[in-house]
Length: 502
Image 1 (tube, rainbow, N blue to C red):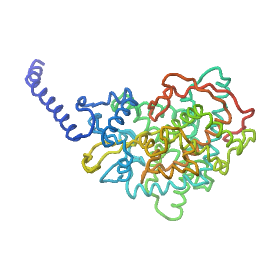
Image 2: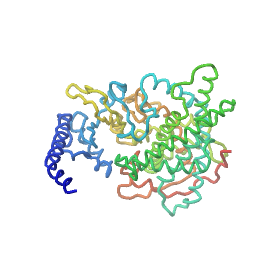
Image 3: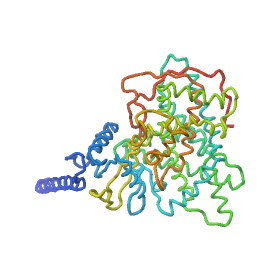
Image 4: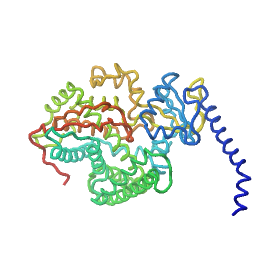
C-alpha cells in the first residue's frame, strides 16, 4: 500500500502537467476553430457551457442568437467536447439543409442524438437508403390515409375535451394546459400510429417510457446507471421494441387482406403488397427497423404538436379578432350539434383556420433549431470554413422572423390567397425543414393543429390567467409558454358529439 502511494506521489506532478496540457490544447483548439466568430473567449474545461444550457436553455440560445446578430449571422460555443456553431442567417441555414450528404452534414435531431435515438432512425439515413425509405412512407400520407387519421384524431380530441369540460369548466379555477395537451397528443399519436395493437398495459408502459425519454433529452449526456440520460436511452429501446411488435402484428393482419385502420397498417400494407408481388422486402422493412422509424414519428408528432397546440390557445386568446374569425368560419362549415366528425372536404374549406395554424407554426416553430454535424471541413462563407466534427445549429426560429411583412406581428392573413407570404417568403418558412430531410408528416401535423383549433374554439370559451412572463419561451424539449398556457375554461357548446373508437 505504501509502495502504491509512493508511486502515485512521484507521478502526480506529471499527471497534473498532462492534465493542464490537455486543458491548454482544448482551449487552443476551440480558439483555432472559432477564429474570428463571436463567442466566449474562454470556455469551461471539458464540459464547456453545457451547464448553462441545461440550467436555462432559453437564455443560452437567446444569447447565441444575439451574439450571431452582431456579426455575419454566426456565433460559436463549446459543449462537452464539441465545438458548436449557431446560424442565425436564413441563407446560411439553407447551405446546411441543402448539403445533407455523407461528405458534408448529417442531421442529429439532438446534440447527442445518435446515442439517444439509436441506429434505426430516419434521421441517420442517406442517399438511396433515405430515398427508398421515404418512398415507402408515401402511402402513409395519401388523402385516404390522412382522412382515416383525421377521424381518429377527432375522436381522441373529443374524449379529452369532454374530460376537460367535466373537470375544469365553470371558469372559476385556472388550469395549466401543458399536461392536458401532452396527454391528448400522446394518446392521439398512439391511436393514429399503432392504435389496434396496443392494449391498456402497453399504453401505460408507453407513457412511462416516453416521460423518461423526455426528461433525459434535456439532461446532461451522462450514460451511467441512475442518470436521466441513461434512463432515456433505455426508454427509447423499450419504445422501439414495443413499436416493432406492433409492426409484426400489422404485417400479419395486412397479409389477410383487411383494410388499414392506422398509420402502421397503411405502411405495412404497402410492404406486404410489394413482397406478395414477387419483389424482395424493401430496405429497412424488418420489424426492428420499423420500430425505430416509428419512434421518429412519435417524437416529431408528440412534442412538436404539444408545443403548437399550446401556442395556438395562447395566441387565440390574446387576439380576439382572430378567434372570432375562426369561430365564424368553423360555424359555417361544421357544428358540434351535428354529432358528426369534420370531414376531409370540410377541413379543406377551413382556409382561415389553416392560415392561423400556419402562423402559429411560423411565429413559434416547435423545434427552434435542427442540429447537424459536419463530416468534413465545409466552406460556409468566403471567410469562414466550418471545421470537421462541428455541431451546427441552423435556427428555424430566427428564419421565421426574417423577410416576412411585420414578422413580429401575429398575422394569419399573411397566408391568405391575396398575400401568399408562404410563397413569397418560402425560403424563410423552415419550421418543417428543407431539402431531402424535410418533415414527411407535415400535412398530418397541420391537419392536427387545424382540427384542434376548430374544435377547441367551438367547444370552449377560455381566458388566460395573466402573470408576469407567462408568454416567455421555455424548452421542454420543444418550446412552450412559461406558464404552461394557464387558462380559465368554460363550456361554450350546448351539446357534444357522442363518438368512440369502436
